[in-house]
Length: 221
Image 1: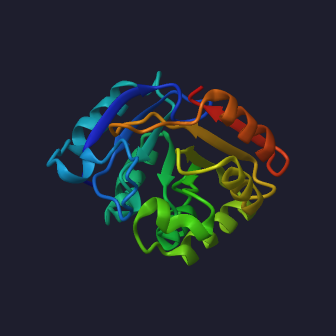
Image 2 (image 1 turned 120 degrees about the horizontal axis):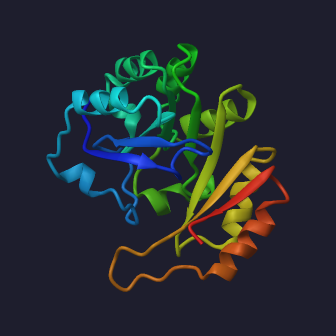
Image 3 (image 1 turned 135 degrees about the horizontal axis):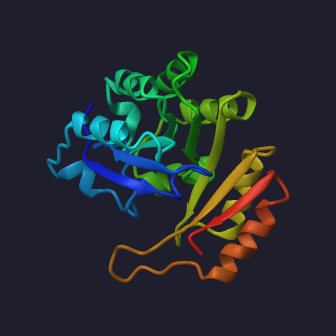
């Protein structure tokens, strides 16, 4: 599997676990606010063996691995990579934008995933305004429903970019009504002249979203 980034220790990327994080290159969305755009254009290749050597050497310390991106489900050999990770005894968390439900379901059917974090970029009717692509909304909605009704641990998460409003966050929360966890992520501007919501606005959005989901995490405040 192609790996473009490797964070060896993280206390925040896998809830309640110490994990390392691998980043895969390439994404099928064009979100302008993405902080990982460099993974799509730079020819960075980290050898799988480097990751597996690190996992093997740190079995008593690390509990899991996070596979993020980019969009990991674009990697054809994602399943084979995860099988090797599971064989070493580690838990696996997958970060996904939800556009490839077939790939995610296949991984689940093989008991290869312990946690899925799915991005909800915007209210479904506003996706193109945020991603700048013609997304497979059928897959996105279907995976959302599949996670809500499945047995694998999960969270939904939205980055509270400046083009989203508190009303948009409420709409998203309603669309995932009954969800175990909804993380609202603070946006850190990475383009000149950008603004971001202040903490009070994000707190207000979180309080409003809490009417519809089990737990709201205000991430990044």
